[in-house]
Each structure stands twice: as structure tokens, then as C-alpha cells.
Image (cartoon, protein in one colour):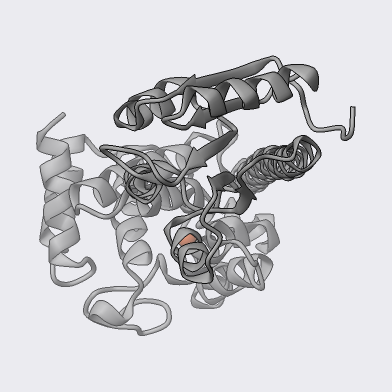
Length: 342
Ligand SMILES: [Fe+2]
């Protein structure tokens, strides 16, 4: 054996002269190549190519019906881009113009007739080796891509899990069931869906919204758990949970953390500008406007240290009353649509 090209490769010989195909087959057999097929009618080139899926084509140029150039024209759209697919042109005509034209049509290399067995074996071996290396590289790239995708997914899952636990830690401060944050996440996602936001955005909101009150971790118990009304000083301190939360979540590189920061900072903004920071209308990020509605609604229909649970219909009326004041009217509408569809 003159080279280490894979002997299992599939080789397609296209030459109208049976004497040539027989000669080439003989050379291949001599070299232990197990997979080859020959056709003498070039009109069958395309169907045989599609069915046989060769690794290399040995192609005659001068043939009746379809010549080698026509065959390459037919095959070209079927060869995937960025693939190394060798076509070895067999010709007695070695003038530079023919060579140039054949290269332009997709030829990889040339073999001049009459064939020299050693030259045939070397050319075939080199082209098959290059193709095998190319396929190996492509395989490795695909494997690497898959690994990177898996790792990224793991990283994202780990991130989501940590954020969920962080949300829970904050939640346990004033609600030992830890359910409020989850419900706010779900409801925010449903509102986002009713608004027609893209799926990726909906998922980000679902994951980020539960962290809206994470800053409460830093609010003293005496204020957070006080059953009665807060004094103005206490209320001022309570309000800092938005900036504390945003600070805790700031500097994140991932969209999820960035959205969580945005929501933590803006979920107490009012559409009319009378919220904690005084932002108004659409200058309040949409995620903040969505969570504002979901958070208030969920707080109303559930019991808190300082209040009883409201019946849902009264809570809905309150949300409606606040449309255009505390809440973005469009988001209130999406909330009502979502509510009426359940
Ligand atoms: Fe809050």
C-alpha cells in the first residue's frame, strides 16, 4: 500500500469507456479499496451520486450526452457548501484552458490519460486522506459545539437555580411559604404573553420577576414584619429595598440577571410618575410595569401581617381603578384579558 487513505471510502468512476473504468477498478482492487462503483452513461451521474454518496469522483471530461463539465454543473448544487468534496478529472486533454475551466466547475485535481498506476494511486490516496481529515475535523467541531451547548445550558440552569434560591431567601423573611415570589413570576409571564412579547422575553420575566423583592433581605425585621402601619421613617427605609435589590443583582453579564436588576429597581414605579423613583410612563422598563401589576394583585388577594386577603373580584376592580394612575393601561388590559381567559 502506498498510502494510508481509508480503504472503506466510496469512489465513483464516471467514464464512457469501459476499458478505462475496468483499468481504474483494477488499480483500486490492487490497492484494497473496497468501495467503488463505475458508470459509463454520464446521464446517470446525478442519481447515482445522490444514492451512493461517494467520497471521491473520478470523472472523464470527454463523454457523449453529458460531458464532465455538465456533470460537475449538475453535482455542484448537491455538494454541501464548506465541504471538501474531491473530483479528480481524467483527461487526455491537458491544455491550460481546459484545466482552468475544469477547476472553475469544481475539479480538485487532474489525471492525464493514459493512466500511470502509481500516479492514480497517489492522487486518489491524497484526496481521500484530505477528505477523511476534513470529515474528522467537522465531526470534532460538531462534538465541541454540542459540548459547548451542553455546558452553556448547565450554566444557565445553575444560574436559574441560584437565583430561585436567592428569591426564596428573601421571601422567607416575610412569607414562610415562599409562594408569593413564584406566583408573581408566573403571573408576570402570563401578562407578558398576553402582551404578545417574544417567548424568550416571557421566559426571562418568569425567571427574573420572583427576585423583585430580593432587597428585603437587608430590611430589618422590626420594619419588615411590623403588623401595624409604618412610620414615615420606617416606610422610607422599606422603600430602599428596590435600590438594595438592584445593587445585589447589578453587574450581571447574563440577560436574566440584568432583567432581575431592572425589575428589582422599577417594580414600585407608577405610570403617572408617583412611584418610588418618580419614573413615568414608558420610561419605566416594561418588565417593571408588568411586575408592578402582578405583585400588587398577588399581595391584595393574599393575607399580609398588616392586612386581610381581598376577594379576587375586588382586587381586580382595584387594579382597574389604578389603570393610567399606578399602572400602565395596556398592561392592565393584558392582565384583564389573561384573567378573563382563566
Ligand atoms: Fe417590592
